[in-house]
Amino acid sequence: MSPSPLNEPGAASVAAIEARYPEDDRAAIRAAYETAARWHAGQLRRSGDPYVTHPVEVAAIVADLGLSPAAVCAAILHDTVDDTPYTFAQMRAEFGDDVTAMVEALPTSTELHRAALDVDASHAGSPDVEVLVIKLADRLHNLRTLQHTSIARQVRVARDTLETVAPIAQRLGLTGVRRELEEISLAYLRSTVVTDRPTRATLRLLELTTLLLPRNARSRWREEWAAEVGALPTRRARVMFTLQTLCGVPRLAWVLSGPRRAVVPTWVAGLTQLAQALGVGGAIVVVTATDSVFAWIAGGIVLVSLALLGMLLFVRSDGPARRLIALIRAWRRQ
Amino acid sequence: MSDPRMTLQTQLVLKAFTSDPTQQRYGLEICDLVGLASGTVYPILARLEQAGWLESGWEDSTSVTDGRPRRRFYSLSADGAQQARDALARSHRSGRPQRAGWTVSGQTDPGVVPS
Image 1 (cartoon, rainbow over the protein chains, first blue to last red):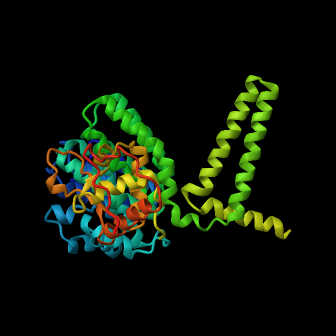
Image 2 (image 1 turned 180 degrees about the horizontal axis):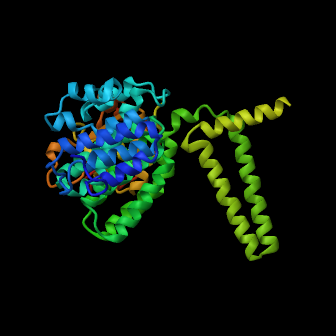
Image 3 (image 1 turned 45 degrees about the horizontal axis):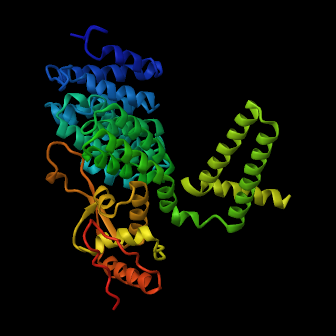
């Protein structure tokens, strides 16, 4: 008996996935779905949904990221061997070596970090990288449906995601995945302590300013501050703490970027300071001389962009500074 | 890594650690102990940690009950304890007068005895 289209759980998503791939690959994707649906039949997710909806949604994420048809099949089949009597030998007979090798190579959550270190992230599209991406998609869908699990598990998964999984997504260049992993995880860590709206609003503002910090330091400070805020007894104390901490973020960013800042030669720093002084002076002169609304707005824009320039050069990373140096050198050579 | 600059606030934070060198403390606790705003204390903690004087680590998650987020704890490193004492002693010797009424946590400041 063949599952009737669109009535079976996950079938609509599978149809959408198939539509993204050429005709030749669709049969294999459909077969993988039918196998997964058959073996997972009767199993349920914590949400109460049929279990097969999970591997299908993982495959949908994998397909959205443009991975190979083999990776899509591997994503659909990723839990069959672990959670059902289905065996790798059966899988190899039905779906071939490529798909089976990927499912076999899927790291467990504890192996993930090690596996990510071993993989050369520059080989996008290689089976090694695709296996990692399937694992990331698996975690992403688990996070999206994390509300159905216990609070203790939510906190544990959220922490592990921030510490281990999100950095791997970043390393593989999956910025969108990394952002969603972090946003969902932070929301769970926050919600365990802070419920009032002013605190949430200021805390979110604080999280936003942590963008000034070097990327690898952000989640540590966000989590550290969220924990401190949660321990404060009154709303007033929480908001005050958050705002005070916020004032210290630029300085913290300065401290944390210390070793890398050294690559900016002093003459570039001097030149930038001079440009900033001239810009600020010029803006003030223009604003006071004309005293119109437009001048105020223009002056404000100049000041803000100068401040941003300063931050870009000295705080966030040395990339923009290097580019500026290269630009100036090229200009002088002409 | 060069030694951190001994500003007034840095000295206060260091004293909070040297007064009980084995005690682990978290950021908010230090803010309360020394009476400084969190925006001042965290950059100092980061600087001292970068200099290797302080170490930090997450609270053991098994000791955290009821889903409260774990805290980040700071403590003096093995080297740091001695270096912090030396630096505090130096900054006192260098002629900066110690202001009366400087106390840590409301107790009388034990101060640092110059060797």
